[in-house]
Length: 311
Image: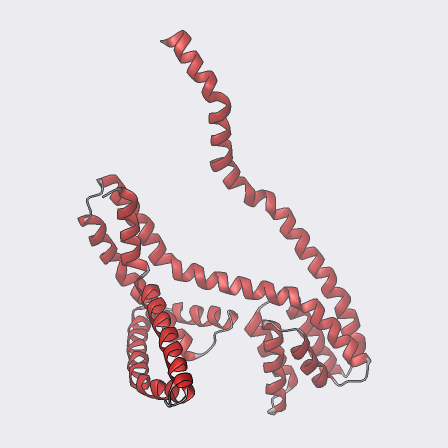
């Protein structure tokens, strides 16, 4: 068996079984739904909605058992984690928009499972008929993916959500400014922004509005919004709103000045990303492009020198 096949087999055995099971479950669910719909259309059988309800009732004990197993594994991972790790994970999950307790339990359970798969990967690599050096390289790649993959995935989710909030902020601030200048109150303007500009920032504003309507002070709700997002541009906007709420300044003038400042901050952020692009391109340029170019340019000359002078 060739070496790429061994590598694919090891990766599938260590990383992909859960994804394959989920895909098979979804395919089976779709086929069952299609069969139920066809039976309901051609014969006097219960409606698909009733069939789905019955299947959901049959799956409830299995789902409950799965949740209990995830909670048990998460508690074990919590006891084995170093001090401060669980708090850091909870903080990043909150920034990623998953601040529920079940999200923390699932991540800790998945993290413990990936760590436990490292010895399994070592055994699979060791018993494979791959050369010794290739075994070492394959095991290092698999261990790197298993140990750092969940952390990198979570950090990427946090960065993507913060970037989406940063992109939506100017449009939402301008919409709030226009709505308040047109005569709407700030709460009604928040509801308008939530309906017109969908996204993570809109969802956070809707949560802010719900907390205010439930009786929480607006300043406390704004500070909680800052803790859930951790975006510098949004933090300055929230600080301006808190100051306006504290000192009784007109909200319309604050929104107009903040709309201009947010646009300037967004332009500066784009310029910063443009200046970082050459540095990020340096690694693939040096290690991928230049060696190939060097081989194409110097290779024929080196062959001719070897044939005519050395040989």
